[in-house]
Length: 147
Length: 147
DNA sequence: GATATTAACTATCAAAATGCAAGTGACTCC
DNA sequence: GGAGTCACTTGCATTTTGATAGTTAATATC
Image (cartoon, rainbow over all chains, first blue to last red; front, side, top):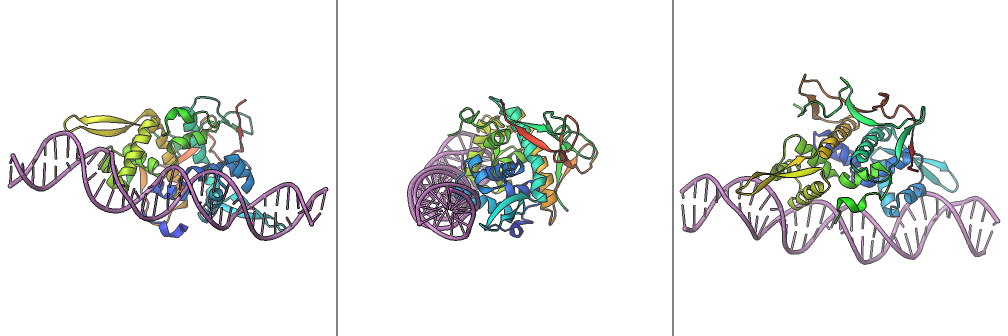
């Protein structure tokens, strides 16, 4: 019902374009779980407490959208797990930014944290402009429409 | 029906916590529009093409969630506009990161771009770890649950 | 002073998405 | 051959979304 192609070029806004492909809670939480190694249907289902039909639909929508791919890990019985594609993996930093925001503004009670495995420090994600290193939000920005 | 308080502490995951407050397409697009100066109901409605009841609900949910605040700009007739709170403004960098992802992976056709008003360059948002400057995704991370 | 217009909604109802519970298919293990 | 596992599907109730029309409180116009 929503192939990747048909909605492209609907809007010039890259935020809207991005949200068309993953703009719902479950999809983002599915990506989070797969990234942390829960690559199988049942692992994700019990982790999220999501209804089975909903998870099935989300997984195939994410696969269709090119964020996940199925990989057969057992021929008999036929079993697949789900892996992030390049596009899916590239979305993980966005989740990190959402996590940082959630931690700053939803901070009551205990929170899980992101740890860098190389040296064990607590990661603090922020969004910057790669061009000059300035954190987004510190300089006035403008949206320029295409010609 | 969803006050800010009652869901807090439901999960220790800051991503899930964040998404509880803004994890839907319309809310994020509303924030985008308000940030670019469309602070009034009708401006947002025509910009997004959203149904009026849905927009009303989103605006009050976002206000309830502490991302927006109403400001009366006319006493007679009584009229309000919507402004970002600190928490709402702090979410803008996440939208920038989503936009960058959307531009990278949804790039067919013309796209609008973010311009830095100080020197006019095209902004390229990326998420990094503030602690060491490493882009998120370049180092292995682990989620640590609270004790 | 009646009528039109503007801005910000609310009300009503149909359509779509979500969610729960139970069931199915393809196996393996005992 | 019965029980268990994994990855779902089916059917149906509930919830959310969306389209359309109407409302309220005013000002502006004829």
